[in-house]
Length: 334
Ligand SMILES: Nc1ncnc2c1ncn2[C@@H]1O[C@H](COP(=O)(O)OP(=O)(O)OP(=O)(O)O)[C@@H](O)[C@H]1O
Ligand SMILES: [Mg+2]
Image (cartoon, rainbow, N blue to C red; front, side, top):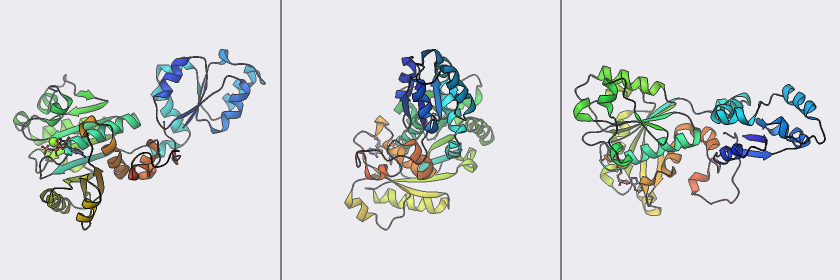
C-alpha cells in the first residue's frame, strides 16, 4: 500500500514508520503530489503546507477531489490512523484479500509439544500484522498456561462467563480467555458455548489451545475451521499420537510438526504427512512471530497472508535473509 505524505507534521511519519507492508512518499510541491497520484492509495495532505510549484493549491485540490484516491488532513489522519488505512485499502479494492473469519485449534494427546507457545505466537503475530481483532481461548486441566506465560493471574473462563462486568485481559492486542477448569467444569456446555461464541463474534481470528480430549471443548467444537494436531519431531510417541488424532478429526485436521531439527528429522519423518513444520527456536517464549507466521501462511494461504509479511510469500520457507531485496507482495496491505 502506498501513502503520499504532504504535510510538515512529523507525527504522521512516526505513525507510518511503525507499519509493515506500507510505503510512503514525501511530497510538498504540488507537482510532486500530482506526479505520484497514480500509484497512491491514500494522501495525507495539509494544503497550507504545500509549495505551489508548478500548480496552484486550488488546482491540485480540484484534481484530488476528482480522483478516486482518498485524501485526509494530518489532524484527521492522526485521530484514527488505522481506520483511514483500512478505508484506503477497501477503496483500492484490496479488501478481498483481508483475512476472513477463522477459528483454528492446536490440540494434542501428548503434553509439552508446544500448543500454548504456538497458539500465543500465532495470535500475537496476527494482531501485529493485521491490526484486526484476535482472541485466544484455552482448554486445559489444572493451571492455566496462558496465565503462567503472561506472568500474572488473569480473569479466567468461569468469572468471565458468569460475571458480565468482568472483561478479558488483553495481551499484545490479543484477547485472552484462560481456563480455570476446577471452576468452569461446574458450568453447562450451553452456557460456556454461548459466552465463547459471543467472544468469537467480536474477533476475526480465534485461536484455541486445547489438551485432547477436553471435557468442555464441546462448547466451541462446531465453530472450528481447522485442527492442527501438534507433535514434536523428536518424540516418536507424540508423532504417532498426532497422526492418530488427525485421522480421527477428519478432513479439517492435519499434523503440525513442531521443533523440526534439520535433515535428520526430515528423513526420519519422511513418511509422515504434515501441514506445517516449525523450527526449534532458541527462545520460543519470546513470541517474535516465527512460529505464528508459518501457521498463518497455512491457514490463510500465501496469496492472502503473503501480503502481510514484508518479505513476500515464500521467504518464510527458507528462513530470513535469503534474498537481500524483499520480493514485492502481490497485494500490499497496510
Ligand atoms: N518450536 C519450539 N522451539 C523451541 N522450544 C519450543 C518450541 N515449541 C515449544 N517449545 C518449548 O517447549 C515447551 C512446551 O511448550 P508448551 O508449553 O507450549 O507445550 P504444550 O503443548 O502447550 O504443553 P501442555 O500439554 O503442558 O499444555 C516450552 O518450554 C516451550 O517453550
Ligand atoms: Mg499448554
